[in-house]
Length: 192
Length: 192
Image 1 (cartoon, each protein chain N blue to C red):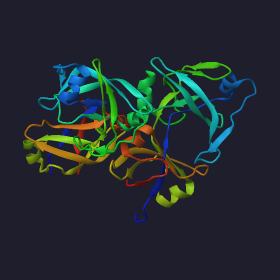
Image 2 (image 1 turned 30 degrees about the horizontal axis):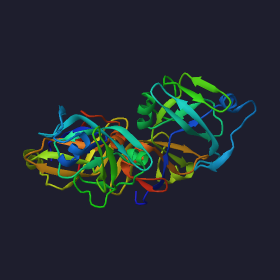
Image 3 (image 1 turned 180 degrees about the vertical axis):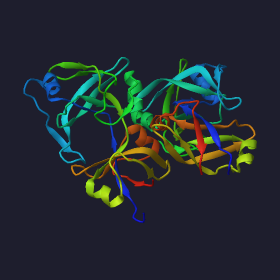
Image 4 (image 1 turned 180 degrees about the horizontal axis):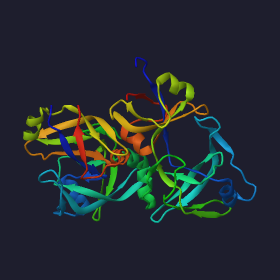
């Protein structure tokens, strides 16, 4: 492979996805999310709205909601955040929340306690189908990605997610970004 | 190199080293540190004593002191901790504190504000001279260390520190431990 397979890196802070039902419990009947700014993946956005989340040991007062509404409510935190909350969530792909810890979520109009939904997101790369084909990468393939610099790291087990709805972007959490000394907008290279 | 070069990993939480002068300001004239538990390096220990540290944006109420007393006071935090404090310390080897941010330190008997001394510790491995000789490693050499598992990572730029006063141990901070899914007592392998 002679072409350098370079990917932009996005560092995800803790955030939450909500169902429409939960949005209306937390923000009022008929409420919807409003767009603060678009994200790298087409149609996805950071909402103006935030919620508080309360774990057994600690809370976060303002957790950003990412829209649009989803089929299941899901809180994504770093391992550091998880210790603060007093939870021990598994590392999971987005959407795979069976058997994960629950959380109490409080909004301006109400609150909801979910029985599951807290994960530490598994690092992954979104590939548009055309990127994946050009680079010979299959959906679900586990990749190695190097980010250089003073705290250079090779991340293993980076999950490839391929869709014609995706834009090329690697997602890591704040622990991973801090450990590697990288911030959103930096680049990684697929090395294996 | 046929032998596997395996090293125990120690994940360091935020901690502080103090001069004897600062110990006496913070804990009273004639005060000394008392041993809570010995650390991996001979003669080093976690003290029973803790201090509060206050940055421009945030504080930590109980920061463990590591003894014995040193020539310069030094606070070691993760990048995550640094954001909480509102500081932007560089990644540095222990002891290299020129030009680093200062911090206000409060103990039961007094307080002291240092003009410099806050670092994010550069990851490193302590080698006893005999380990280094057996494995062909020089003091100050930059190594690559792999830790496997679900969040497997290869850490680059791991600084070798070789002394006949050291015991074999790799030190990373909590961001690095969390990013790699490793805890104290896990193993890493020198791969380059």
